[in-house]
Length: 412
Ligand SMILES: Nc1ncnc2c1ncn2[C@@H]1O[C@H](COP(=O)(O)OP(=O)(O)OP(=O)(O)O)[C@@H](O)[C@H]1O
Ligand SMILES: [Mg+2]
Figure 1 (spheres, protein in one colour):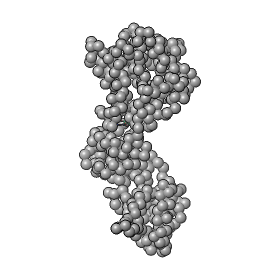
Figure 2 (tube, helix red, strand yellow):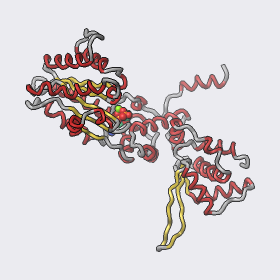
Figure 3 (tube, helix red, strand yellow):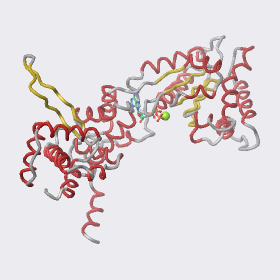
Figure 4 (cartoon, protein in one colour):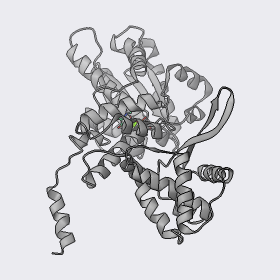
């Protein structure tokens, strides 16, 4: 066995310094509590209160949850459903409805018939796999629930997948309108939670139906940076060893992710950064690890860099060398970048450009998305003292960038 192969096997012995419990970063992990979603949870409980309390007027309740990617829609409904079932079990004998909660993701269901059969086979294990239409299965499902004096709360996640298929809308109609068959007895066995990312659900429904449904629509808004920070901190406490992460690192990840407000992306970035730190046998997660983690999701913009004019390449090289040196901060001040630029020009026999042109280079690099530039105009007693700024590179790995720039700038 060669030395490098042997080392590969040796590395198996290495136990993680960073992770305490990596499972909390897996997609199937359900956190004990969902931060900053208290209002949404309360609203959900309120909507189903009449059903749970067997109010005589209670028809089935249908709720729509709408919001973009990674906002906690699925997690909140799963938590709600399992707590609800537990609550109903514990209150058995009191005047509380017996509710069965079913969660199904429509992306994984090829048709309504398969979806209903899945549910029916859990209710009646010997139920035949084939032979009935979706409408028949729905009727049968409701009659079983009526017979057993139970209620069914069906959560259909990513509902658009089934509704956009042929026949999909008819069955959705039947599901929603199912209540009407029970109007005379005020006792519908079926309630729905429909989860959708898009605002297009109404295009599949007629306006009267949609407007009645939209009264029970809960909209999930993107998380802001402070909320994402709280979510990251709670997960870090759960999954990472203490002192392997700093508040600054978590804040930086929260800031990177806040443009989409997506908690999944923020958590994935933290996990990736932790993995990079671990693979480098680092004792803690550094900004460089966050940058590398970002690159593993976004390919390096090499061609963009290769095509830059020489001076912009040198400016970029100056920024990256400063950031590489200072592993503990995310920014370089433009004054330092200017000095490094001038020094690099001198060392390589290139004549440096003046201040105004230097700022044009910075702005151009910012415009094409290679750097982030925050400009601060300084004043003293109403007099302008010129501008300064902070430069950062958040989505590219600095060490690799420096090496790459050294390779493609022959003058260096
Ligand atoms: N408020 C929160 N507190 C803790 N973790 C959260 C919170 N919101 C979301 N998450 C986490 O973010 C990830 C994504 O959440 P979830 O799957 O519920 O999002 P979603 O809105 O259903 O997204 P999609 O539309 O892509 O299905 C999960 O790992 C979840 O644990
Ligand atoms: Mg989801």
